[in-house]
Length: 378
Image 1 (tube, rainbow, N blue to C red):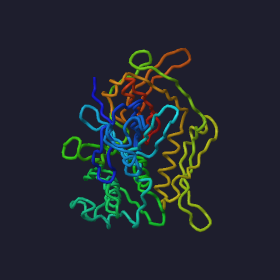
Image 2: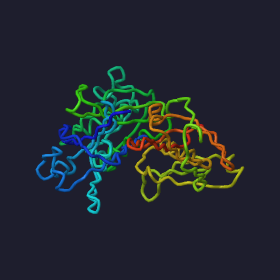
Image 3: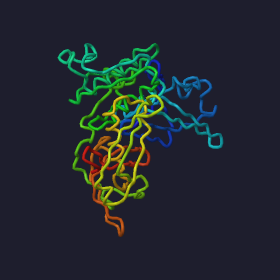
Image 4: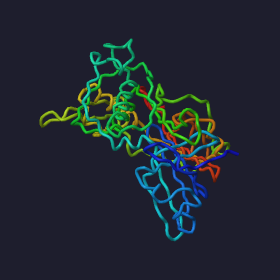
């Protein structure tokens, strides 16, 4: 049986304020390339000592946002840590719900204040390793520069450890202050390209000393298709399905990606599978999520990604399993999923996109997605 702890901490100094007791309905959700979340419930009435701090060791002042943070520890290792962004006081039950997001969520409210042009000529120390000065920018170094830049802003430090990592994929990229894109969007866009990368911000105890200071390490995973685990999730064997949804509402064989406007006309990237269109019929998609793109080759990549993700119907099971199964995978892993139940016949490879741990229920809910590569949907 695992030992779980629930901690309130200070987001400015990253120090522990108190351990939460009488926690109800805890959940931790980890999601690929995004913030993740967690929630707990605690009693909040004056009868529980919150006025004078004699019972819990903290008061309502310590729950003031944006300073309040929630951390969850499993067997001495931090499983989650991030700012509390939503609190709901339920007066009929006397329960206070605390909802938190991972540290990456803060980057939605941070905007660069300098422009950058990532070309070989601009590759210089300390932003790239010395051996690559004047040669080029690995996409991981571009992400590192943005995170370093964000932490160097006035009041911007987030205790993120951001070491050099390498993917072997070099990029050119240009961003202007006037784009007004957040650090969250910039890093997500860099990761989301074909041959991009997966990433996460992993919390840990600084210097391995429990109960003192929390920090996060920025980790990049390449290639972005995840580990081939060999794991088999089979309906009725080691997992159950809550449902299986087959969706054909977004199938397309051609895709446009709208670039940054030039005068009164927009530049456009395009990609299509003419053979698939001929076999069925014409279906198209317009990607308007990357209108800051200035290079048509990048726009073509976004058009390709949009088409690949919608190249056939999606068959997505919702999976519930014993919580111990979560020890066998990490976010982004590839797994094989099988089901044979009347009209439902499934045997395909998927990626684990997010999962939710429910320690008190002893279950893990797993959400998956088809694997998208440059050659298509797996």
